[in-house]
Image (cartoon, rainbow, N blue to C red):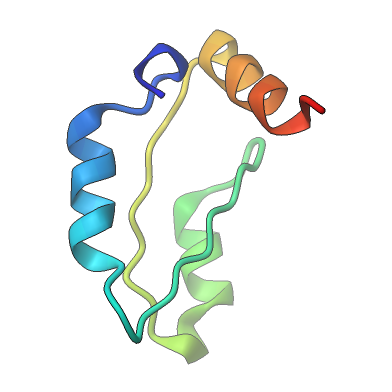
Amino acid sequence: MIDMGISDQFIDDVKKKVTPGTSALFLLVDDVVVGEVESALSDMKPELIASNLSAEQEAKLREAFTEE
């Protein structure tokens, strides 16, 4: 995933937070202000972890999720 702009540290941080009895929602979005996402989900009291990818990294990630 590091080739796609997602560092090992980010993955380790997520692993520590997503433990038995919890869940995670991963969003891959364009041109969204993080605050707007946080506001829209505020009723659920989420812990928002964000990462900004370059256009090239985002394209690689999208490609990985659309492969058959």
